[in-house]
Length: 201
Image (tube, rainbow, N blue to C red; front, side, top):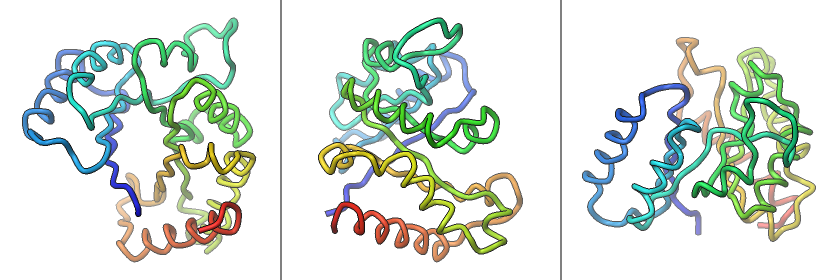
């Protein structure tokens, strides 16, 4: 049975007070425990405060928007998986399209991040998707398959069960184009077929 999950990525938005007010507003609206995980992906400086708010409500979880691909070291300004775990983070967004585009993150780096997250008990939300140029060529299914194979297919079945896959139709973000339900479902179906060939239905 497929599990429902709702995850909101704040990106580089909101002050601390605004962010905590947003979380409070969601918690107040959803009085009952949600059917599946509700995940807040907050900026790094807000993680600890957000964790304190969320730990009192079952079904609500905290995510970081990124992590570094090395365990520790002289990487000024970066944040390690161990740091994230120590402040109550449960999920980590890995491979967001903006990280791939602006920071040139490779599939190999993302595989390292996935490994580190799993080693520390954090759950990766792994992003995949294609830009407009790939969509227009009609090679979008192969493009996403390459991302998944390169970053995830080294995992055991046990570890793979801990991965959340988030498909991003990058070509429909800020371009004026809209991804239809049918287009999203087409990619979801292709991803499921690909995963079934590796890990079984």
